[in-house]
Image (cartoon, rainbow, N blue to C red; front, side, top):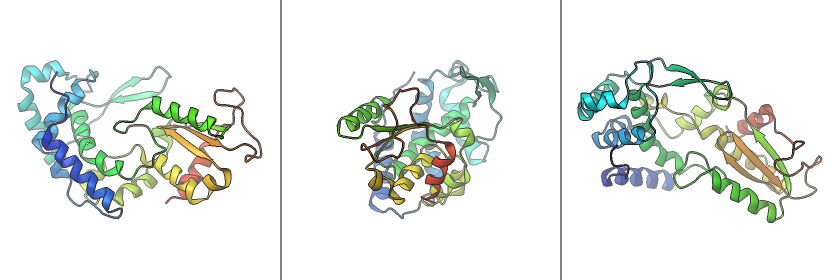
Amino acid sequence: MGNLSTPKSVQKLQTALHAKAKAEAGYRYYALYDKINREDILAHAYPQCRSNKGAPGVDGQDFADIEVYGVQRWLGETCACAQAGDVSTRPTQKSVHTEGRPLGISTLRDRVYMTAAMLVLEPIFEADLPPEQYAYRPRRNAQQAVVEVEEQLFRGHPEVVDADLADYFGSIPHADPLKSVERRIVDRRVLHLLLANLYMRRFVLGSKMLGLERSLGSRIVAYADDLVILCRRARLKNPAPPVGSPSGKRASRASVGCIALAAS
């Protein structure tokens, strides 16, 4: 399956990228495509994808096929495809989620390359994400988000707004989060590979810019498309029951979008 521990050369690159982003909030990266195509980055991305045991994409190729063909040979061809611009442009294998939502299964080549992009880009955007966000971040998980909600309830924030954005990745406006990406990434070959935590980051920052955190005494805990807003008692005109109550207040997609726009 391969070694999942991060090689020292990859760690060194990630540390340097994160340190620069943390030290200079306005710093923009002009050349990242070459880093995503590095041999050590792609070689580390492959076992990361292999460990997920995903289904084949539209080309029908699975990991067993790659290993018969030769992993190093295949990775070399992946790098050549990327340099030619032939990555993340192929159609996806259509499938259906258990909740009835359509899913697109990327080819293994696209998945490995997207993982390589994540290895390079994550340290940069991790420096910008606020502590309220818990999804898709190193050393953070859903259990920690639940613990934080519980702690805020006991710290005097018993009024709760529980929100879940339906069809999150399919319905959020992509143009606005990409503006946030462009504040960091100038390399246009990399821009089309991105999107995830950035829209929720805009919501968290927008709520602070609008003074909602101060006026409501609120605290936000977000995980992907789920978020909980906890307020001190008597700050809401229509206080909501505790999390999990069938009558709990739900935030509309429109209201979340308006707050996110404040951070534009």
